[in-house]
Amino acid sequence: MRVDALADAGRVHVGETREQARAGLIDRWDRDRQAMPAATRIILTHTNDEVQALNHAARDRLRIARQLGEDTALRAERGQRTFASGDRIMFLKNERSMGVKNGSLGIVQSVTAARMAVTLDDGRMVAFDLKDYAHVDHGYAATIHKAQGVTVDRAHVLATPGLDRHAAYVALSRHRDTVGLHYGRDDFAEPSKLVRALSRDCAKDMAPDYTRDFADRRQIRLPEPVVIEARPTPTRDPFAGLDLRPMAPPPTRGMFDGVRIAVPQPVRAPLSIGLETAVQRFARAATDILRMRNDGYAELPHHRIAYDKAREALDTARPEASRDLRAAFARDPGMISEAAQGRTSAALRAMALEAELRASPEKRADRFVEDWQTLAKAHRTFRHAGDDAGARAIGQQMGAWGKSLERDAQVESLVRKRLPKLRIPASGGNSISHNVQEWLGLSRSRGLER
Image 1 (cartoon, one colour):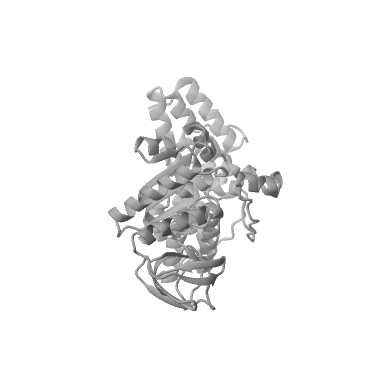
Image 2 (image 1 turned 45 degrees about the horizontal axis):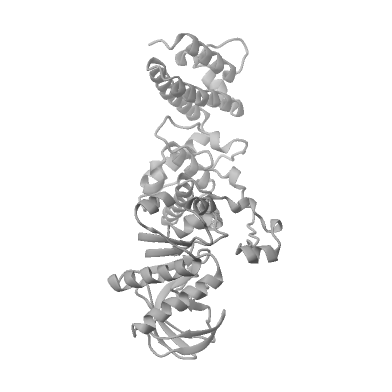
């Protein structure tokens, strides 16, 4: 979400100082809470110190409104905390036996020094002994990092130095309904400086670039090292080259060049429920990554982890299934969201077709011819319309397709026999890629025949 769009909607609020901005945020949070008590909400900021200040301020408002019970002091994982019935609470660690995750939110129903009962936002009730689980904190405010998996109805964000575009994206996408952005002029003297901070890419600002003392002064959170086994770099992400525009189909193997593929056994019916579930999870992970990229951001580490786990699960359900599904999604990106919503039948059929194509050079040659004819028609349309840029873009794609045959000798041999049908000149012993370039050169100089 763009800052100027938020400003146009009246959702950017500025104070002369950060203290005033914080006070204004709490005022708006309190009015919103009273006007819409059934809505879920959270306050987000960058540092733990600000989180504590905002949590205390929010609790003070509830205490004034007499909406909190008697305070009980207890020793939580982050130190001494005071809780009461009616308090908003955040769980800080996954615990399967309780059904809570890191970032789960709820309302305290009862609390003693030894035990707590909480109604979660999804309506479930959990009760636990604090000697067994003490990973809790007040849940009115949280760091942006802690809130990556949180979704609420309404959010309030306090911007401070140290934010970057990744954190800004997370903070401004936690809400279903509305979000407000607050800042002080002592942090950002003018709006352009706020925009610059929220637009910068701190991936280059790695921990070695800062001393701890400097980072503390500037409130820059030094990243913890992330270790992922056999994790491909972002530039090798299978979806890095996926073009979601409604143009001609991409090359059959263009996104997966240089990888030797073992031919799988034919897909047997009926397909298992396990495979359907694996397809849906893979599609959901792919959707999250593509949504980030379409919004102009790189995916966050937890997106890559989810994607890699979904890919491994899919290949466990059926060898090479993730490769087949990526190829199917590349040809028909609309299947991604459909499969993510649980409608996997089209994706499963497309996967089976991709497996058959990998096993059959003849079928791959048939597809090349079919796709080439589609591209040639689009190229002719652009050329006749005088759209040189469109024709050039299609021509570049056709050239890449011709070159891709150099990696598939069987298909190249089959396609060579069909060059006359494709109106591609077959000159001497040149490669098909060379023949394609000649064809494109002729089309540029005299246009395609009708």
